[in-house]
Length: 217
Image 1 (cartoon, rainbow, N blue to C red):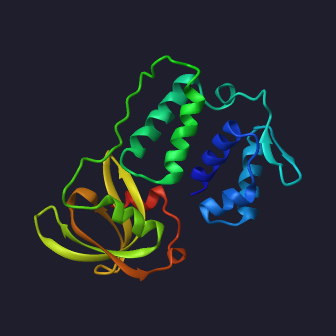
Image 2: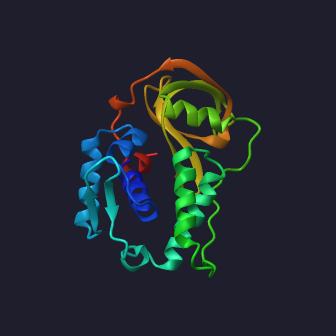
Image 3: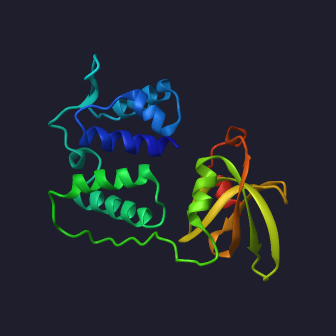
């Protein structure tokens, strides 16, 4: 998602001397041109990004630039950091863990406590393997599971998973349900006996998830 890339690029610029567009493109599996557009978006927002040619160069940010003076206050930075910590406790994704480390770097100079407390972690469940669901999304693989409806009925599903979604403090996996032949939300706490398939699907055939897609459920 673009917002994830923008946040990653911005935090990388603030915590590194230089960043390279091709390296960011490899991380997010997008084109270098897409990363250039992301950097243009940040520049248009008033963030002073410059470039230096050569093997040791790349994009960099003005050393005098302060994140808290433009985008976030100290309290807001701590809030973002605490959210990333909470998410990392459930979703062990390298990019998320790296973002958490970088946010820790940005808040370490100010020791005052944030008035916000976020717990976005999942309740631990013996029924499902969250790692399998994450892997299915990351590798675009079909995943099967038993699903318990609100009435207690159990059905076997196969889905092409696209996102893990948090809505109204409840966690879901969003994807194409082959049984119902449409996009569906599946509450993680109602999933049983996950089975990761070797079959792959093409996520490009689905449009990027939007708020309107979630609100219809």
